[in-house]
Image (cartoon, rainbow, N blue to C red; front, side):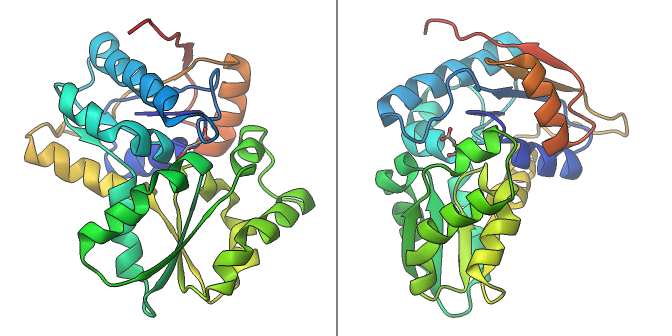
Length: 262
Ligand code: DGL
């Protein structure tokens, strides 16, 4: 599983809870985050390095792209070239979103790269569910999470400004289309009000992982708990400290990951 940094830990948490026997290798590319403001071509290159490293260096039997921006940038290429199943976060999130709404007015927020890519518009179209989608990019949210600042006045002021178009659209369900955003859920929920249900892709992605592994007969059976390894391309001490706060006690073993030329 990989992400630009700490965001994919929301997906890792849900996966460890649902599939405790599976071994997990997580790479947070904190040395090169944020992805959301970079050209999609660059993000696609990073995603290929990370995914191939998981397969070749860590013997991954499946790869989870726990990053919406990397999914938007390179999912098709990864699926075409990797020799293992590839699970994304966009399509599971959309599935949860269209099931949640009652009014049919829905919102999605994500990084500039994700929203500009149109990945959500395309994914919603494939469901065939007639919803009215309002999208907004939220530059700055990821940086708050990477600094460990998930509540407070500064986050609230930014959220009020960025979420205004979504509030004006009177949605009843809002998809957190960036895996970092569940860490800001309290603030986002306060700003949106109690009539709006926040939808995170983490749980739905964990179900998608289970189903995909089961289809490919790759589920690890038995009661022996899985092993977890967390890697970062950035500051390892920060990764261990903040990562353990965000994920929980499983994040106790961290190592350095360095990109290879691919
Ligand atoms: N967590 C990543 C996502 O889901 C993004 C972050 C970034 O901008 O690095 O899009």
